[in-house]
Amino acid sequence: MTTEGADVTGVIPQPRQMAPHDGGFFELGPDTRVVAGGGTERTERWLRATLGAATGLPLAPGEGDENVVRLSLDGELDAEGYRLGVTPAGVDLAGGGPAGLFWGAQTLRQLLGPDAFRRAPLPGRSWRLPLVRVEDAPRFPWRGLMLDVARHFMPKEGVLRYLDLMAAHKLNVLHFHLTDDQGWRVEIRRHPKLTETGSWRARTKYGHRASPLWEDKPHGGYYTQDDIREIVAYAAERHITVVPEIDVPGHSQAAIAAYPELGNTDVVDTASLTVWDTWGVCENVLAPTENTLRFYEGVFEELLELFPSEFIHVGGDECPKDQWRRSATAQARIRELGVDDEDGLQAWFIQHFDTWLAERGRRLIGWDEILEGGLAKGAAVSSWRGYAGGVAAARAGHDVVMCPEQQVYLDHRQHADEDEPVPIGFVRTLEDVYRFEPVPAELTPAETGHVLGTQANVWSEVLENQGRVDYQTFPRLAAFAEVAWSALPAPGERDFAGFERRMAAHYRRLDALGVAYRPPGGPLPWQRRPGVLGRPIDGPPPNK
Ligand code: ACM
Image (cartoon, rainbow, N blue to C red; front, side, top):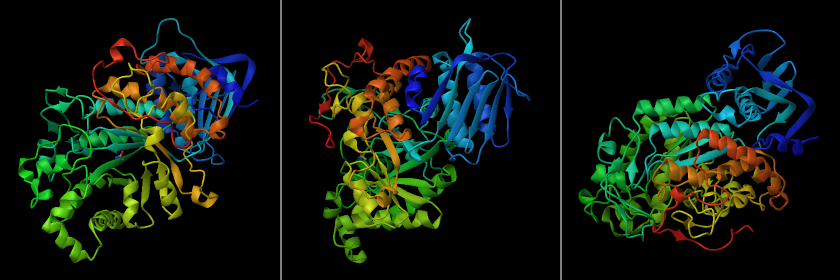
């Protein structure tokens, strides 16, 4: 038998094949040894640190055939695939590569039961594994989560925690939205005011921008370069790539507040700007000057030293052109470059960094607006304004990550009820996310090859702390993980009832992990935000 058997243990995301064997179990105990083959070091470390803490067992290194957890690599499997066998003699876990092995270890943890997700053992627990054989590999190589740490800062501990939560769901790309109008969150040594001035604001709009409420206290924070190195290394231990985003030329008021010469000084008094304290699309954008390019080359130079990721995200979304229309400097630049208009100016800006990154062996990725001016072939697109950007990108030969706002913006409300906290955007339930299909139906097989994968985006305008981020992200990230990992049938044929049955086990895991998810019955009293204005958008998702 295959997938039905998965319901017994509730593995999420659902493995490709899972065949339970009747009549027995293997129990991890104090004498269980870990037999670790070459190339398995990261998973071995993780097992001892994480499962060791949860079980209180030493999981000591050793040899032999009985009472062992055997870790190995098997080049016959996909690099991110794994094979997991549990027999009365022990656990045999083989990965196609180190990443596959690690994902297999995540399945093993789930099979041990919810208490394997705690940080210390509860008294009297035993660690029985059902006898089972699992063969598994992901559907997509890019299984992402975007965290917006700019609108509300997420302290480093919170980011490390989210990396653990991602790993538990076999997600492998953290898109780290580090800068926006409301905050600059990464130390740049040559431009210290980006964080001295740009990393905090005096007060913050509470709720949607039309809300009359303010949180009248300073908000801020940033990651030092050593914090970033720690985050990147912690992610790499978990086979997660961190893709940093520096958003240009829009979403830049925090940078302009720190360095007013970056703004359009001939049309705005940029010296009087502060880090933005409310939400929406901000008109204060970067000036299209050589000075701005040099400044950001310096930013990206430091960034490349910190982030080994092939992809570097440059934003490119929502850049209002009004200031450029009014600015004599911008207009002179249009004439000088021989571009048609302000859109051409934005394309020139993005293309500059496209080339600049390519010359340094990296690849640019940006929101789908970057398609508007034409891009080098190596650049990739995050398709957020529905499917159209993804379709256009794939047809033009660009790789694409599907993250349409109508489906996988997890800051959007997950129920139509009035007591849903700060309801913004579309109603997207757990089932809606479960039924999301990342690959646009109209693509040919060759074009489909450009879909690197998919990503859920968690914008934080109305998520002021970890509890709010957890509430919006979970349980929907579990459904999203299954969309990104499992080769699910067509959206209409997906077995949501079966997923819900497996979620019964998964909620217990999230409880053990301390995740403040939205309970199936709706928010707990302290998860509500009575009287804080949101901005609901009505209507069904466009692909339904
Ligand atoms: C976006 O939501 N502005 C990418």
